[in-house]
Amino acid sequence: MTQTYISDIAAQAGETVELRGWLYNFRSSGKLKFLLLRDGTGIIQCVLSKKEAPDAVWEASETLAQETALILRGKVNQDDRAPGGFEIWLSDLQIVGASVDYPITLKEHGDAFLLDNRHLWIRSKKQHAVLRVRHQVIKAIRDFLDDRGFINFDAPILTPNASEGTTTLFKIDYFGENAYLSQSGQLYQEPGCAAFGKTYCFGPTFRAEKSKTRKHLTEFWMVEPEVAFMELPELMELAEDFICFIVNRALDRCQPDLEVLERDLEPLKRVQKPFPRMHYNDASKLLRDKGLPFTHGDDFGAPDEEAITAGSDRPVIVHRFPAAIKAFYMKPDPVDPTLSLSMDVLAPEGYGEIIGGSQREDDLKVLEEKIHEHKLPREAFEWYLDVRRYGTFPHSGFGMGLERTVSWICGIHHIREAIPFPRMIHRLKP
Image (cartoon, rainbow, N blue to C red; front, side):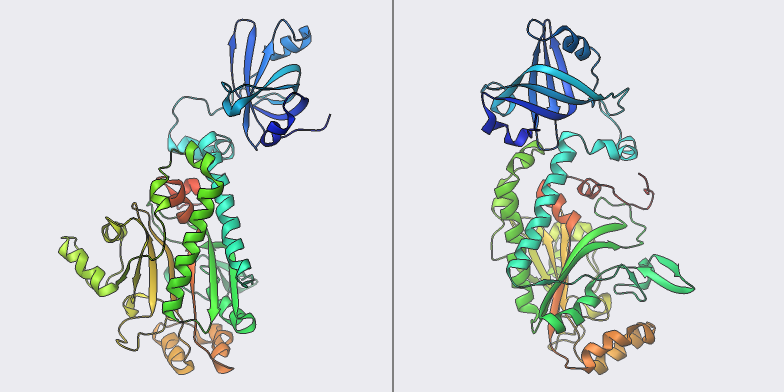
């Protein structure tokens, strides 16, 4: 028989089908067995009757254990009492692969144990739901950008230079030369947008940050759009539209998964334009007025971001950070050159920064001076300076961290659950 997927079972009511998957859970009630089968598209209850099943099938069912791989055949019965409104009355059961002493049981397990068994933990209902939401967020990101004329312009993972800071680089030997795992694909999007007008890259990035917070990974995915002839005000509008689109897509397509995660949907429904906007100076004053130990001129920590978004029912955009704490490529504010034409988007509910971006420095001489001031190797940036030598133009872009965004949409506590296999300072396996 042709395999039927659980997600398509409603169209097969009254018919005999073949399901292939794994035993998620099971219970026995005398002469009836209730098997919960998962196949990656859903979970369905299958009923086996000793009275109606062949003896060999019933005997095989006696050996079943959690996560046994199975092929099941039976009739689809509509029953509103069953999970999902349908169940399968089995006529045949075939064991494909046994499962002995599956380590993740229904009891409570510690974080370290679950992360050691991440390759199995992703089979559980909540982890499965998070990663399904991640999939839809990725699709929403690409749909938004592709439908607006952006070109996917891939950036290299191995780079000869730093984009964010030399203290958080993963350095490797590249045939006798120094190379680094990419912190960002942004520098490569700038020549990209000079060629295509609107580009983006979307892939893994790496930061050697010795941070143990719930918001940090050493390897994470980032989407980075870059737009020619765009300045900071338009960039903030693009970020607003981008986030609203992604959240609305999640609400439209991920409600069953968000329900599994017990996510309160009301805060997500309130994510609409316009977002509150706050100048860095005003944010700094707000923090001091609230009594936080914040020094004007510093970057925000997690408590600061939470204080800034407290009481807001949607993300907050903070703009014009001090130039001294931002990357060399950010353009100074012409009104106050000590500030940069930069912006961060802070998600509410304590999730903090999900987007960071800026208008880029487009003056060749100024950029050369900044590379010197930051003590960066000039030869590694000659190609980057060419973008200013040959038809310089105003341009802007931002980076959005996928895992932080997924964590916020799902309402989960730790970012490590928003990626299939997290990498942290003490976590390289599995």
